[in-house]
Image (cartoon, rainbow, N blue to C red; front, side, top):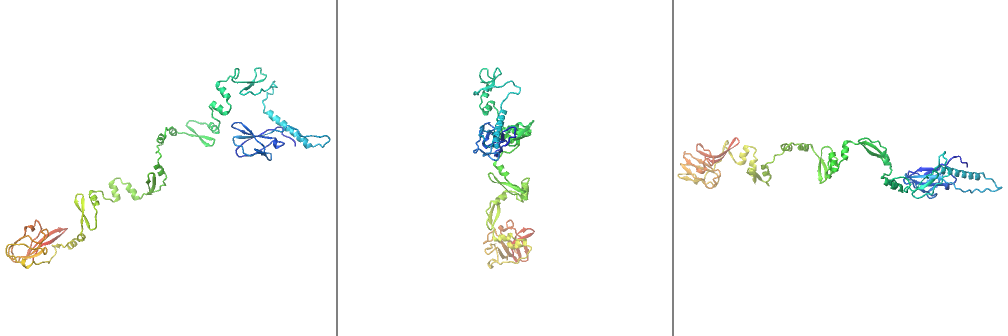
Length: 467
């Protein structure tokens, strides 16, 4: 082949953690002539890669077994062997391809030497110096021009006549790696985040924030937020925020999903739920005072009388009655009294209670036994054991004693026949002061009544009657 390139430049690729194929754009004779190094961009160290182990060469591409990371670079160069394996024999055929490949090899070597010298330190084109020998390396020494200016020498920076540096710089110069140097310099390791921060152009009342993994921007920082950021503790921060301290009850409340006409209530120490809140209950909750609440409830105001009534233990056929200003008891309510109390009007009351109405006529009479009909002289004691109604015929003036055979607290009806106009005196115990009565006189008739008013009607129970 012919070699048309005037120079040779090694390949240098930056890894990304995924790419494994890297093209080789310069000419080479064999895959083994390629030298591949993996360079750590953080430490600067390099690691020689082995053909067939770390990589292979396929179709003019270096194919890595493991993709270089973003902190690694892949360096590919060419080192053509310095041997000459072409053997030309006299009187044999001249193989042009073999001869040309030998020339190609020599050209590659020239290019490689030129590339190497291109990276070497050289004197300026106009310099008059040449043939300077570089001294052998000495640990922890520097190389400098000698005092005569005609050669190079090594120098201990700490020795007399050495570099004029401070003790700090002497320690810094002794550092064997970047970490030690950063420690002595009290310097932060370079990072993409710091580069992003350094790229900002801040002004007063601005705050830097991240917009990506290694990207930053600026936003306003208000006076309020500066005060909040200056809070000494959580209490001060809540005060600046006018905020309620976090607690389980508020957390439970925040978990609700309220809707219209719903009311929150507790279901546990730190558990809440929702229930319906009707229009009626909203009106009740809006009551301005107790009277308004009772009005909304259509309720009776509490009283000692109601309390006394509530304190009873009633049973069937009992009636509550007062025993004091705020005291009540129970008494039996008979079937008869329930009938009386159930009277629809005055007439029904008279009928149900067995009363007589003065406005009505009556014809009920009952004769006394014959032995009691005739009175001649002295006192007469009426035997009422057969009932409260008796008939007495007067044949002369008489004085009546208290009846016998009947409790004096009961009404007594005595019918007196007085055809001859005789006089009589009633017993004192039955006088008007104890038992109201009326005396109706007519032909052959004297009658006494116990009477009382109910509404507009006058009711009576006959005490004395005769016809």
